[in-house]
Length: 512
Ligand code: FAD
Image (tube, rainbow, N blue to C red; front, side):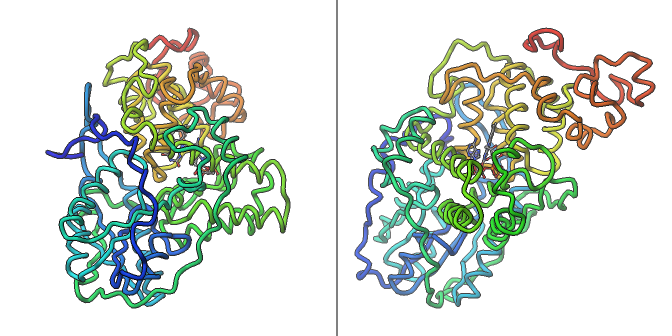
């Protein structure tokens, strides 16, 4: 957290017992006025917090743009560093998502109060203004979010308002796990088998009928501008895989488009390692992470697709990936701040991490001289999105070849990704860096990977125009070009495109 606030990432908040009390905490008959505090569940469909509030009586939805989520902040603890928490692309996505939520609520006769302020100030103030009995909200498993929730609950308690916690972010409900979340397996396969065999996914909840919101008592409030938030206003980049527009409306459209209109799901398992274009994977992650889409809704649509079109390995595989997402959510509930330590949940202290600012900056800017890594980083910088394959390679290069503190890379992704989620991001980074849920060496040979997944060089030349005349046989290893070939292909190494920053003939572990 910025300024004087504690950094929940540096330790202190143990998540271990944070979710024990998700049982209903109010008798619905006793609440006349309910506030719904929207967090990363910006949707009307399958939203338990909204649905339960609507069963109570008067409902006032509220959303707070937390100033601590924007601007520079410190990654706390030993060897701390500074980074920007939310970059322009995700800030745009979030603003659009809240605007869409407001529109959808207004269409249903309700509204959402929007404020630019800390939730622990905004939510209790709104609750007090309308004399609410209860505040419904979704609990999130990651330490910072738990910290914010605790601060809100403390203030609500002072006001004698009941906090009603719900679980809205995962496919499997926390209360339906076969074991307490504190006992779940730390390996994905065991976790997946346990939920597949011993748990069921609840049906998505229908959209509730909403009463008119008593919004005039506090004023609806404008959605903050990028300037208010302190982020840049940016245009959509035409080269992006997809135009990621925030909101439940656009998310639902993408889900329907990918599955039914374009009929892509039948080949997902074969195409999911793709690098270019909108169709190789679902691209649902930004909507899932801001909560514009519920994973249970996605599953329901996959099941419908299986009934109406085809059921095959690909249709199953999308659900398999959604279980990966769940896995990291529950892992963070279990391990909390340990995930943000350099040695990770394994507390490894045998890796010799390097401090090298200049090397980090080259990686971040896409100037390493390794085209596959550079294309991935340029795509991220320009659009906020990267395929899973590109993420794995970019992350592995930083953590396993340059051996720079993996958390700096993860924090850079945190700034840039349109689909950033704390558990998915830091969980995947830790995994690749060898300090997370897998003890094996997760290093990727980025040149081999490039040849395998971008054999024709289309991806690298899309993002690195300086290499566009280089033939596929050389494009992933431009350092092999003779001076004559460089002249022929119109690229001069060291001028138009960097020399590699590691020894390409060596183990890749030797920074130059
Ligand atoms: P699809 O292939 O269509 O998958 C469907 C959904 O499954 C995704 O939308 C996502 O919700 C989930 N999913 C797929 N793979 C994973 C995975 N490995 N871990 C968790 N969930 C997964 N994903 C994020 O949503 N947010 C992040 O901040 C994030 N950071 C990552 C950082 C690194 C270093 C790596 C290697 C992966 C990261 N991922 C993250 C996982 C994955 O790369 C993205 O979910 C995926 O690329 C999003 O594109 P998609 O929606 O088309 O995925």
